[in-house]
Image (tube, rainbow, N blue to C red):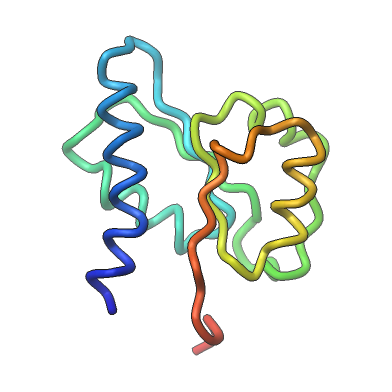
Length: 116
C-alpha cells in the first residue's frame, strides 16, 4: 500500500520536475496539509534545489472544513501543481471556480481517517 501511495505522489512530481528542470524558474507546489508538504519535501530532496512549497492550510487546522483564503489565491494561481486529499472535494471545486486548470490539481485518494 505504501508503495502505491509513493507512486501516486511520485510520478506526477517526477514529470513536473523533469519539465521544470529545463527551466531556470523555481518550481512552485501548493500542498493542502503538512502531511503532503512533508511528503513533497522528502521526494524533492536532492532532486531539485530551487522549489517552493506553499502550505494552504495552517497547522492545527481542520483540513476537511478549511475555507480558501483570498490572500492565497494569487500564489495558488502561479503554482505549478496543487496537491490535496480526496476528502477536500469542496476545496478542489473552489480552486476550479477561480480559473485554476484541473490539470494542475492532483488529488490523492485518502482511505479512511487520518486521525490517530
